[in-house]
Image (cartoon, rainbow, N blue to C red; front, side, top):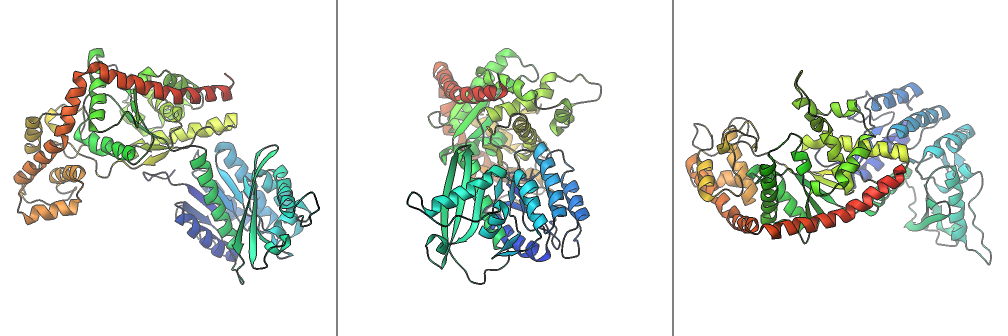
Length: 587
């Protein structure tokens, strides 16, 4: 998985030939990057920086070279690519290596999609010998999810000709599609012909046509045709470009149509969020909501008792957290807000998912290892926390998660369990969630700016809770630790205290850091004067929110009714997911 905040779909593009590999891969890579993919390229003259392999000299990859590439890529337990695209290989030996590792990859990561462009010839001429064609038919295509031959290659693979005649009860296009569907019996669920002269169906000599067939069930096919102009002198590599476009289309269909976009936002109810929580998460949740996203806001009170809490304090914190979120702008008419503990589906799905992972897998998560001390008793809840988190995500078929990069290991566990579920039950019922960036510059402690602002900080002056009264806000900003330099400048390494205050100012005001510093220097503000400005900005920003917060806490029954309504709406989604999971598992 990519280590960036957004989960970018990754493609491994493999060719062997010096000409096809270089031109074709460059065309395909350009197209895929335009569509937002991250592409790693393997061929005889260009090895991706991501793999770390040396450039291989010669016109074609050797069997040993291709095998070493795959072995390196398989070093991790989970294969890191979403799609594999293969083009010209040129020999049956290389194809057997491809088949060996595609089989292995799919056994470990069944969600990986394999797209095969069987480059074996064109315009009546074979580029390879007949034995290579047989390897494609008998070994490669049974593994492929999508195959994208041209019309000549298609005829070689089916051992026949495309039907171009018609009679009174049929038409030429229906015969084309039926002929395409004959290739489904070999294995691929999607067969798309990259180019057929339109004149074959009585059309224009200057047009080409793409015919596609997708197998939805044993007797149900989805078909389509696309017309495009014929270009004289079309250069080597257009087949790869076509395959890249098919891949982009398939990714959109698979991820946007099968799974509607849904964003899950979770927060532990530790009373009122502080400014760091607000700027790092809550404010961005509200922006997502207001932009039209389908938001589920979960008060993660089950996670809050990973280590036992005082019951009355926890009950109070749950209501204060809910009131804070609502006062800040979470709209219960547009988003779902509910208490995790009021939906037993979380714990039931947690148990079902725990059967798909191992103790060793969970123990390797860095956040768990960082909290475990030698010879100290380990709470079981702390160990199982990431599995419950995966259940939270999958219960709503979440497509996007606005969390920080520190949560990437937990998301990797979630992806691992999606892979395992598919491996065992052969049902694709969960989307792989993507990370949404939530933190630009994490807000630091006001007293120890080398640490993040935290509720667990023993010194209350180190943070500002967003519902603090005005005097408290003013006092804590004015006593924030800076340095002996009274000028305003931004340098997180050399001046962390002042830079932290500028980050808070930028987050609340929406101004850029450069603008804030420039204006402060123009007005000759020292750190004391800048702190006064910042305190007033925070007070004015949260004043109406604080009034609404107090109003909500004053009407406890109304607040509880909002959470109950949210629970009912969340239950409708959770019921469907859990019933589907149990049905697939045979329960």
